[in-house]
Image 1: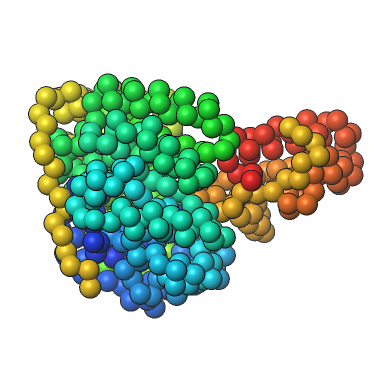
Image 2 (image 1 turned 60 degrees about the vertical axis):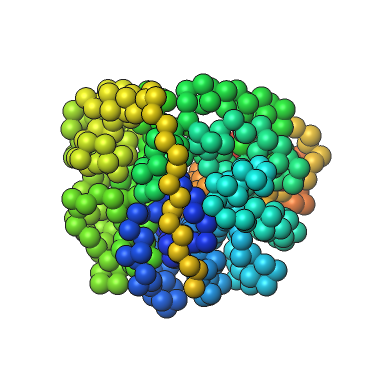
Length: 359
Length: 86
């Protein structure tokens, strides 16, 4: 099958992190990814992506600023005319680090907060970091780089959306992303603690709508709904192997950051195989590319090129078959799995992502 | 829209021109531009006003000012609504 042009590369530079957020999408066995690509290897990945037509580089983790060679990787990408986006929790963005990154050509920073106030934020993060995030936000605002504040929403903080918006307003932030937790990695493990209630989601939508009306184009608010509450699944990654490439810390290359959870697919590593070959020819990237792989009811569905059958990882986690229709879809024969989970009465306390010493 | 306002991209918006495509790169992705949109995007430089952009375009495409203005207004309002303009 002819491979389309990839537009976006996500480099997960490390899975190390000093926070313990229970909704982290990193794999449960993140300790297995300690053999991280070197700076030169990351630069090669970036160059190979640029040659494939990728225009945007997202640097994430774990916490990407734990990599001391981050600025060098940013510079390699901006020299290749890529748009460079740093996804960080901000606790290591001191003056020197930030200046180095901006000088290297960083275009955009996304800083996550756990909640709009310290006590709750630090409780969710499992450590005292909120104050340092506020300082990082102020530093970014003083520099010539765009900023988005991100807050992952779940049962514990979902009722605080209005406060999160007020928080962003206080800082004069132009872009706010309110993203309902997606259930992969640690978040999947903690799903019974994290799933918001329908009432929370409905109130949240109303709060966001009111704020958008009030703020107009002063602030862009993205509110990502949990697809369990919708009729149809999300158009995950705009289709498998269609636009996105993810490279995990050890070079393992995937069509999406959660796909390592699909244990039935062959592994491929950019240390061993050039990125172009992975993108165009690998069994992994071709497994669910296009529409030919689709089962019923997707195969004949009018929405097959709108939502692409939904999320392969979610299908695998819930049904054991990555080639099944995403159970989030109301047309899926497995939809009752989602309904039972979503409407379940079981609420558990969350298990923090096990802390690992930053080194 | 005020016709005398100078138009400027928001921080974090980059116009990228390739041999066969023009794209606006924004934090969450890329917007592919058609020929007219690319011509407009090229004229958004923080100095020109909407009226001046229309003036240049109508010469460039030898089109009536009114028609150009209508197309340009629609595109620019779309950009503004998605936070692409400062």
